[in-house]
Structure formats: C-alpha cells, structure tokens
Length: 141
Image (cartoon, rainbow, N blue to C red; front, top):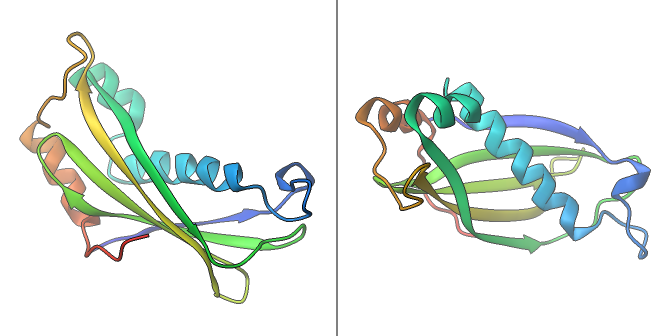
C-alpha cells in the first residue's frame, strides 16, 4: 500500500495572529495532498472530469491539532485512502514537523459526483482499481 508524501515550508502568509500556522492552512495542504494523490494514481482531477465526467466533491473535513508549527518550520504531509467505496472515499492525512513529530492528523470524505446529474455516481472499474494501491487501514483523526 502506498502513501503520497510531500514537504511544505511554512511561510509568513501561513502564520495567524497567534504566531503559529493558521488552521486553514492545513485544509489547503489537504487540497494539495488530494491533487497529488490523484496525479500519482494516474488520474489527475482534469482527467477525471473530462474523461469520466466525474466531479470529486468533499462532504466532510476533520482535523485534530496536536502541536503548533511556526515560521521557518518544515512540514511533511502524508496522504492515503482508508476507505474506498463505489461512490465515496475517505482520505487520511498526517502532518509531521522536521523532527518527524506528529503535529496534526485529519481526514476528508469525498464523493464522486456525475458532472451532468450532480448525483453520486459509482466509479468505473478501471478508476476504482487505480486507487486500490493507496488504500490502507483507518487510523482516524
């Protein structure tokens, strides 16, 4: 089973009034992770939309913050799938600082929506199989 891993630097525009990384930045990093997972699976979002007529759509985001990140820190983000059904998937995220300490973890639930009917739609078998390599156990947020 595979995880997609990537590093992000903490910049001044990530910092909130309390002097640490803003909570919303983690949601932005989740977006980057989702897009990277799709690309590594060979299904970049534009291919899913144009070739299969599907709109990957989020219905839930959960994040549990454990430690703060500050200006100058590096964060390593890991993303994988804990569940893959016919019309939905749960993506898991882990955020580590440069000392490999867990600073946050989260998950997002997404549906595959038909671009014309805007109704949840089963994934074609070929698409479903491409995601199988990224399915691992559920560790929860």
